[in-house]
Structures are given as C-alpha cells and as structure tokens.
Amino acid sequence: DTGVSQNPRHKITKRGQNVTFRCDPISEHNRLYWYRQTLGQGPEFLTYFQNEAQLEKSRLLSDRFSAERPKGSFSTLEIQRTEQGDSAMYLCASSLTAGDSGNTIYFGEGSWLTVV
Amino acid sequence: DAKTTQPPSMDCAEGRAANLPCNHSTISGNEYVYWYRQIHSQGPQYIIHGLKNNETNEMASLIITEDRKSSTLILPHATLRDTAVYYCIVRSPGRYNTDKLIFGTGTRLQVFP
Image 1 (cartoon, rainbow over the protein chains, first blue to last red):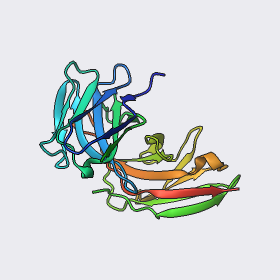
Image 2 (image 1 turned 60 degrees about the vertical axis):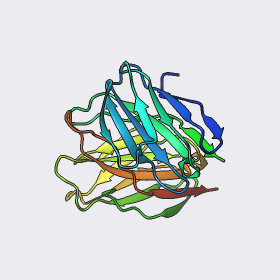
Image 3 (image 1 turned 90 degrees about the vertical axis):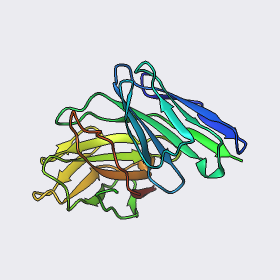
Image 4 (image 1 turned 90 degrees about the horizontal axis):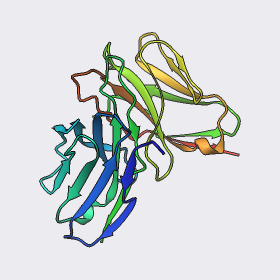
C-alpha cells in the first residue's frame, strides 16, 4: 500500500500520560499536514510541514502538542500530559507542492486517541 | 472558517443519482472547489475538484454554476457504499500558500435500498 500510513491506529491512555503518533506520507510528497477530528465535526487543521520545515500552526495546537518532521519524510505528533479533551481522531495527510492548479491532498486512515 | 454552506443531511435511493449542493458565494477567482467524502471512522477520501468548468471522473461529476457561487456534486448511480459525509471545500492553491483544506460539517448522505 503506497498511501499515507498512520500508527498506531488506536491508542488508549490515562490522563496525564504522553502519546506519540507517527505518519508516513506518500513517497516524495513534500507537504505533510496534521488534522484533528472529534465526533460529529469535520477535520480541523493543526499544522503543516513543507519538507522538514513547520510552516504553519493552528491556535488549536497548544504547547502540549509538538510535531516534527526531522528528515522531511515521516512525521510525529506528540501530546504531552494528555487531557480527556484530547480524545479525537488525529489525521495525517500529504501532497506534492501545489502548483497553480493545486495538488490533491491524500489522507491516512487516522489514529484514534481515547484518554481515560 | 469554512467558506462553504451545505445541507446537513440528504437521502438517496440506491441506483438513483445523488445530487449534493454546495454554496460558496464568496469564492475568489483563483480558488478551486474540492469535494471529499468520509466514510465512518475512515480518513477523508478525495473525490473531484474544479475551477470553472464542469468536471467528471470515475467517481462523480462536478457542476459549477457560471457565477461560481455554487456547485453540485453528482453521484450518478448511488450505492450503499456511497453512504458517507461529503465535504465541499474552497481551496486556494499555490506554491507559496499553505494550501490547507478547511472543512465544514459537510452533508451526511444516506443511501437506502
């Protein structure tokens, strides 16, 4: 499968623990996005990388959240001191650099987080 | 904020065409209309996109009005597997833009037998 891969698919953690999600984008895609989705809502943008540079962060990305893409390939999203409100599906997406007509953004299957 | 307005839900009989409307009255000249769908518990799936002209691919057709203030996604022969939430998104592409997708709450399409 050459699509966007996310791990783990499901994670249950106790409040206060740290969790880390990994995203492997489609090969050669230099743009990578993280989204969060809660029940009944559309995905919400969290942050975006162009290669290894994190170029935009949403205000939703509190200081407990950190995302990295050290070599411009895979990315990690870490949540420190998790809270129950962090329970959501975390989506990763990737694309090539958009030209004037745009390039399709492809999503992974998401990582479900439940904080108990 | 999302720049589109969609009905919250729609029904369609299996085998019939599903026509999903979207209003985007503030769309700019260089902005595209994208459609994604999300089947329960899965990641969003790209369907189609367009700028001015109508577009068709193996999944659907996209009809954009001449003033570009609204569009309709057409699934010509809906099946039960088309039951999903459909998102209409206005996107500003460009090499120097973030180019992110801003989702609204979409239309929940229920296809019934």
